[in-house]
Every structure is written in C-alpha cells, then in structure tokens.
Image 1 (cartoon, rainbow, N blue to C red):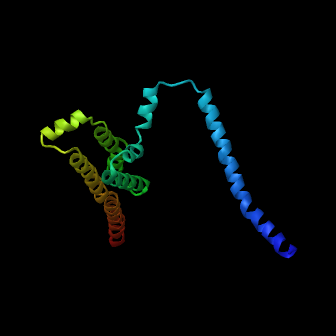
Image 2 (cartoon, rainbow, N blue to C red):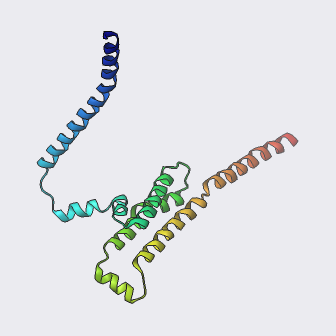
Image 3 (cartoon, helix red, strand yellow):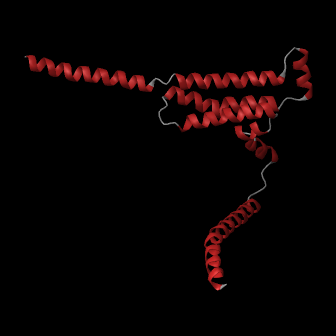
Length: 177
C-alpha cells in the first residue's frame, strides 16, 4: 500500500504546488488592487464612466447579438493587422485610426440612442440596427482596402531595382572603358 501512496503523494504535490502558488499570487494581487482603490481619492463618477466606455471591446460587448459578433470580429481583425510588422505608414495610420477612433465612435453613437431618437430615425425611414451594420461594414471595407494597398514591398522592390541598375550599369561602363 505504501508503494502506491508515496508516488501518488509525490505526483499530487508536484502538480498541486503550481496551482496553489498561482492562487496565492492572484489573491495577493487582488489585495493590492483593493488597497490601491481604498487609498485612491474618490474620482467623479462621470470621469470613470467615460474612461470605461472608451474601450472598443467594452462597447462591442454591450451591442445586441448579431452586431456584437461582427464588431468583435472587426476588432480582432484590427488588432491582428496592428500586430503585423510589414505595414506601410498609410495602412498603419488607417488601421490605428479605425481601432482607436472610428470604431469606438460608431459604437458609442449606436449605444447612446434613446427611445426618442430611435423613433425619430424610424419616422425618417431609417433603422438603427441597419445603419450600425452599414457603418461597421464601411470600417471593415476601409481596413480591407488599407491592408490590400500595402505599397511598402513594391516600393522596396522598385528601390532595389533602381539601386542595382545604377550600381551595375556604372560598373559595366567602367569595364567597357
């Protein structure tokens, strides 16, 4: 019986220790955050609400279901595009603007609609959900265009070709002379 219990105890402690250590680290971090929140002066509620709603991901999570998935997929696409290293300056700027300004502003505009503003849109023959979908598709199309028009590799190839042409044509002239 001891031959079985000793290896079980050994492997159990081997696997349980990292789990317990991680739990203790998380508990310590939570205590630190609680202490920092208690020590920090009370900020106005409006300032914390506006800071919390600035995140496009948080805004996207508050959307109704079909639009939530589309907005989150677009947000993932923007984040993946920003993580690419081979973007030219124009594409990187468009993607950063879409991520930090265009998408959050669109989501905020939709989420801030009141029942009165929805009825006003309906009276004008506009549907808020359809308008949100169209605006998200416009942002997605702009991102696709920015990613499709990556001029940096073509510019590098042309520059290399001009360099090689100048370098070896000058050398060919010296050899002939």
